[in-house]
Amino acid sequence: MARRRLLSTVLTAAVSLALVGVGVTSAGAATGAAAARACSPGAHTLAPAGSHVYPETGNGGYTSRHTEVNMVYDATTNMFLPGNNVALTDRATQCLTSFSLDFERQSANASDGPMMAVGSVTVNGRPAAFAFVQPTYPGDPNGQNDPDPLAHEASQNNPVGGPGSNPLPPACSPELPDTSVAADSLDGSQCPANKLVVTPSAPVKDGSMFTVVVNYTGRPGVHNDGDGTTEGWFRAAGGSFVTTEPVGTEDWMPLNDYPAAKPTYDFYDTVNKGKTTIANGDLVRVTHKAPDANFPAGSDTYHWHSAATIASYLVEDGVGNYSFSTRRASDGITYKEAQDTSISATQQASNKAVMDQQQDITDFESQFNGPFPFDTDGVAVGTPSASFEEEMQTMITFAGGRASLGTLYHENMHQWWGDNVSEGGYALTFFKEGMAQLAQYLQAARNAETAAGGPGTAAGRAAFQASLVAQFNTNYARTGSFWSAAPSNPTPFGLFSNSATYQRPATAYIALWQILGTGRFTQVLRSVQRAYGGGSITEPQLEAAFQRGLPNKSAACKSQLSQFFAEWFDTAYPSGTAGEPDITGPGLAGPGFYGTHGGECKKA
Image 1 (cartoon, rainbow, N blue to C red):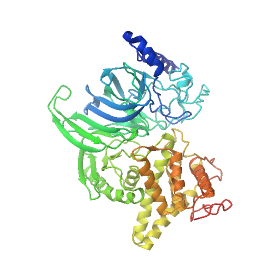
Image 2 (image 1 turned 90 degrees about the horizontal axis):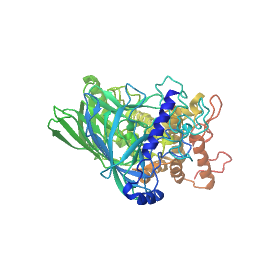
Image 3 (image 1 turned 30 degrees about the horizontal axis):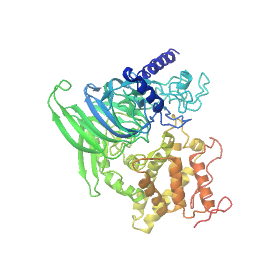
Image 4 (image 1 turned 180 degrees about the vertical axis):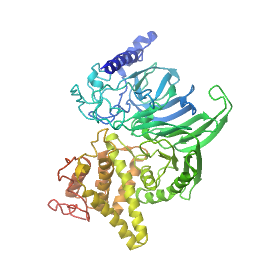
């Protein structure tokens, strides 16, 4: 209870501070009053009303266009030094009296969490007021500064429930201290004040471009997720290792932390002389600098540039003792390889044997997805024992000092699905994880094809098809909890559930492959990449793309495919029952698709 009261006090103080000087000066009170009537604060979330998976993330009133990271980082102390800042260039979508960013400058994780402080903020070069406030649940009719403490509580589900039987939706997902605690152990706790609200000296006009610079220093760290795992800025012996899904980027930099918010990036990373930085896109240059107050032994500045947009959780910017190499391959892509030099020589050689297959994997996956969407691709192997590997855009991260081939197939597939075409919100995580899981099923099918004679033989092609069918049938026969959660309605605790998020949607993709046929299925994948590349997609948009790929576009077949999606993506079948989707595909276990359910939908 003491913690709740403290956070409520912080909220009250922060709200009071945020209301000071909102577009008003003593010299122009009349003008300011008129502006206040015409303008308003930007929303403190991009999540739709009723969301219960990281509903605190994202910020409205503007679109993110470009981010310049000006890192000044001492790898020996794991500290951001004076001069460290980010410059975010945005376009206003309304007249803004204030707007917000996501920034977890400190957390309850005293050992590995962040401990940073904001020194100043400017908007278009002019000093701006700033304050940290708690999030309010999306759609709160009482506004973003709702004085009711119940409007600022954490939960896995909607409504909050918890010890206080709170009937309101959650304002944030709980940050569980570890994976051993119960999922609902923090339901009803107060959300931390992680919304950095910026109030410019004058309102930002609707449609105008503006740049906000946040100067900050201190120790970056990790975020405790709704399942008790951690992600973000991991401390490594030589510096840092960055892997951030789903929201950990805000534990080392302020940003618009939502998958659909995708600016382009430039990184200007100044670090201790001799250190290497690893970021997204292309390495433009390395500049060696003389000793100064921050770096008495000198420093190096790495400039990385990504002309491609990057989703918030895919921003990579690690620092350390990395070996780093690039090669321009025959497919026109520049492949990057980085490994922490503290990894044993034997393990580095094993990792390199895996990393060297990235071009082959990329060329294989391009057969289905279309051309690779970026001009670089890469792998970085770090030493921290993070709980997962991640598809950081154009620089896939492997934790624990080891790279594995099956995981590389998975993460490389993400460069199309999740990276180039991102999920429109966290509830759609299954869409891209299912595609990445499908890549691992394709790897197994490829191995079967090779063993049977190769892709140019009838026996090889038959083996490839048989492998996918067998995988579908194995998964479809599963019982227990495999079907108990709907992929499109996860909790934070189950967001990365193996069955609902990975295997079940991947199994559905195999069924779609059978329903549409190979040619039409791959045409759909390529059309989605063309239509939504560089941006994000929603579940209805994804399903509409597959509807357009049906060989028989009769009303009956379209209706049947809609029911297929409802069963595979949106339905929870209680554990312990015989429930499972009853629409599958031709040649697969289950009722099939054409000629079932009364036979209205016929194969073209």
